[in-house]
Length: 460
Image 1 (cartoon, helix red, strand yellow):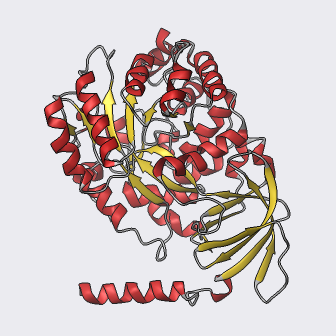
Image 2 (cartoon, helix red, strand yellow; image 1 turned 90 degrees about the vertical axis):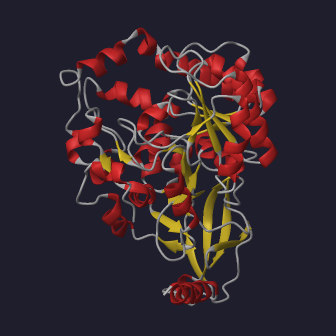
């Protein structure tokens, strides 16, 4: 049976390569007058883009002659290469009553929701190790439509440290001596990144020592696997950057020390933002403001979750937490920090931390981009943060350039000034073919929402 399946797969791949798949007319096509955002100059220019099969073959300013190849005039619409949400957890959508109301859709459901929302990739930064990495290794983009999965697998943490409370196996590194064997064992499974937790100021949870972190980051560098350090404070950011972290995830909401931007720039440490986790929840705890993501949210999220908002009279603990001194000046502090980081040239990468409250799979990335613009980041910089910067970090050959996979969306050109236009995509292309979005809802919005599925580890 396994041999037959492999032969069928090989035949399908051969047909796609030869352009003899389901739609021969889509095997080769010119997209004329496509606006393309250049990652170096940040300028937008009109280009003509030739697609053959699943690959971009040519990008030119010269108008091609009519030689029998199909042509489509985009009339200046933006051809944006596939966006990647660089901080997700491929479980589902969170609720105020986490255990009872969690909308579990699993890995396939998450990736279907992502692509439905115009997001081509998702970096999972903590989940079930083998489940995630096995799924990633067995994706067949030529056979079915879904976003591409990238994964860390587990968190590296200490006994009773952050991540260990989730009921999912983590990698424990209580001492420097434990690091190398644990990292090398995981490295054999080829994780896309290595994630470790550093929370030096956490009042209740222990965290890795500086000596352990230093060994961890050195081993990641030796293995050429990008490192991601979960942080809780600017002191964590400083420590991680000084010890060689490739990135930190989470932008602290306290005032940023003046030396941080120069330090991150000098050490080439990127920041994966996740600002929406707090800022969107603050928007929703008193009222439910109209949002540019409403249509996507109503389509992809269990109505029972949305009915929990506003939360002012439903979850006093949640409201008190959001009103606490810690978060009182969150937006002001984040605005100041982000402006200084961007001005210094620090690499900013967008990630939603979806699966948390108010950050829904697929929708969450659009919410994150909205808040980044609200904090003062330009739309062009935001678009590059979720495309070019993500590709550079993951080592991907994506983009609007010859040799890249034909993964892109068509957006109104106004998105280069107004980031809320990211939800107004006209078409989504995956490996050169138009995505039938409605078919994605079978897995993105299944007929069951039981949290128990998460515990059981059921996955298609």
